[in-house]
Length: 122
Image 1 (tube, rainbow, N blue to C red):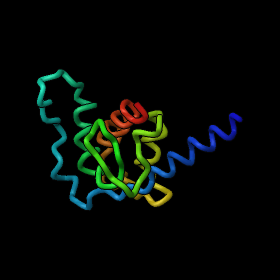
Image 2 (image 1 turned 180 degrees about the horizontal axis):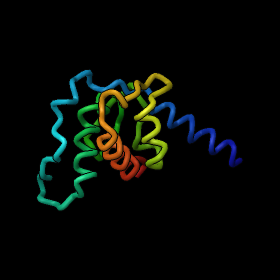
Image 3 (image 1 turned 90 degrees about the horizontal axis):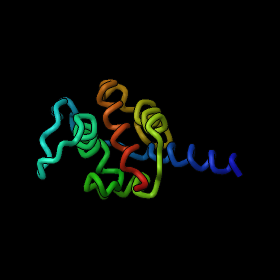
Image 4 (image 1 turned 90 degrees about the vertical axis):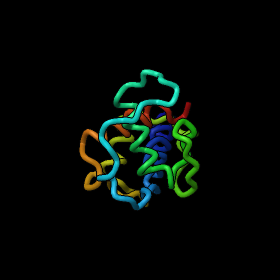
């Protein structure tokens, strides 16, 4: 049973691979997050991670916390993923998802991975 659960988690992580990004140049995405509309004190990582997710992942993935309704990749609202799994998938790609290691710098990958892990499946 544990092997099946682990296989499903790995399969889900690989399925995240369907995200192709928006095709836009992420260099235009500022590395400092915009303040939240409600004035909440969101951590820099989660605010930047959300901003990076919207710019690079929302065309493929559904994630209600980011207002994303992508249809090509897995619905992240239905997956509980740990940060290491997300980071590996974003960095290396696979299963239809491109690697973002050449698009996002390591700090950006950390930010988007932490953000997704904190809100996916919730």
